[in-house]
Image (cartoon, rainbow, N blue to C red; front, side, top):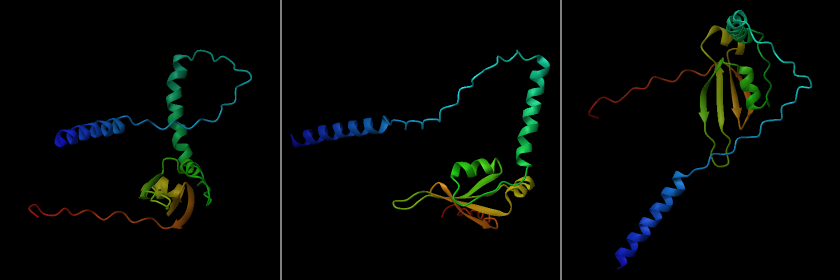
Length: 154
């Protein structure tokens, strides 16, 4: 009788755990700041086929121009979002230390190994700790050492 009761309790506990683990709710998305309404919205004329062909070329020409501009100014204390916008598409994360109880997370970014990115961000690395730019250090983080896999049979 005791064995039958333990089996039922175990089955019920397993069902409850499975249900709790399978029905995870997604975190609500942060509310976006309200967009200012345009006082006078002028209707746009229908684009001509020639204009439609020119738009992709203009978009491609504008995107690299952002990276070739003057180097952005970084200041200790900027938020992570501001720093990521200043990086554009020229930064790569080299180190990530996840948060621990009582400790903040740490990320270290540096310029990608491309001439335009090094020109834009310089040969330095940026430490973001707890959501703000903590430190800007001269020099690049050395690449990871290649991994050596143990020989078979070990």
